[in-house]
Length: 357
Image (cartoon, rainbow, N blue to C red; front, side, top):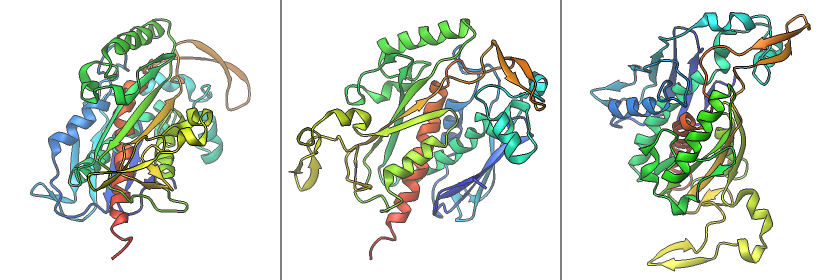
């Protein structure tokens, strides 16, 4: 249970961090879509470990193999199965926590829920699983391109270092630096802060902002499947995510209704809003404006310091941080946020075609 996502364009991921492979099965992808394998690989490369000094040094090439659902470069309408081999596992790095529970990890809850736990790298709870989502999200992006929908995310905050609002940034510059912040001055500060924390053998959290442009009007399924609710559900299912807000978010609570309302106007036969506090969604349905939201990530739970915990017997123990881990997850989380947003938008795009004759 809980391994599948989506209704029409749906995915099921499989595999563990230190197993032979991870992968995804995509169902509901329409036939005839050009499957650009080079693009899929480029998306996986954005997420893969070992990219820079501020990411984990685990070396996974994340080369994928399509097992079904594609013929002569096009989707056939059959389920698309994608496999990604694990090639750089170091399971011995985790033998010391086979009987102990790491603070703020899923060790204890998985043990109690299932009665058995793959302790190697966190098993199924590891962020390694998100590579499968990125592969599926790349295909969702290819589908969305047919409708002109564009999705871009970037690091907008690390600790207390905050980038300007997305409307003041050139998002095409997101990949210009290793922290994936399109504002060069802010990026420099973020990189220095992450490196400082890394040398202290600690971790730090941050925020990823995502923007969906050119969304058709009318995506979203009231009452319980509102577009923003689905996006929130998708983002909160990403490892280490602790918060989601769209549009004005919590800052909107400080405004009066007269300040917050987005007034409509006619822009050359297209209905638009003068402001976008709604974040491109009204009544749970897209209104054609930019859809934008923030995703908050906690500091990575594995720190290279001794911490107090307990073992399976309930005895107090000291847990030492070992292995290769990100000092800050947000730079590598950018393509994951984009992928999950793409999966939601692709699903709702197909659902919208069933709304009226």
